Amino acid sequence: MYRAATPVLHAYAARCYRRIVGVIHRRHPDAFRWDDIALEGYGATSERAVTKQVLVGVADGALNFALRYFEVAAGGSSALDEHAHDHGVVILRGRGVVRLGDERHPIAIGDVVYIAPNEVHQFENPGPEPLGFLCVIGAERVRG
Image (tube, rainbow, N blue to C red; front, side):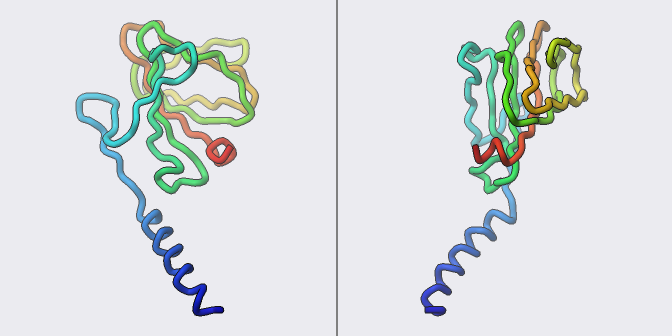
């Protein structure tokens, strides 16, 4: 019985080893787009006003978190949202406004935003250029 299980164990270890070495997704030099990563519309009301790319996620072997890039078009906004998971955001492009609860705060390149669990939040882009940001979420959302 031990010998029969050995090939299965080796196959599993080989799959895990491939994931341990990691994955690199290259960004296009002219845009905030990454090779081989689908560009998805985000939110029912967005009509492509908000797009999402999952830069690191389950498909890459990451089971404990996901790293996503969102872009809000000029004049657009994300849906007013509230959910059980928290997340961290880093602004990479443009300027905008983030709503946290009942307060609105200006945001710009380099700013970092923490959104607590069950906090009402929304990203707005009143400016003339896209608002782009990285968003990290934890395993409870990745698996859920």
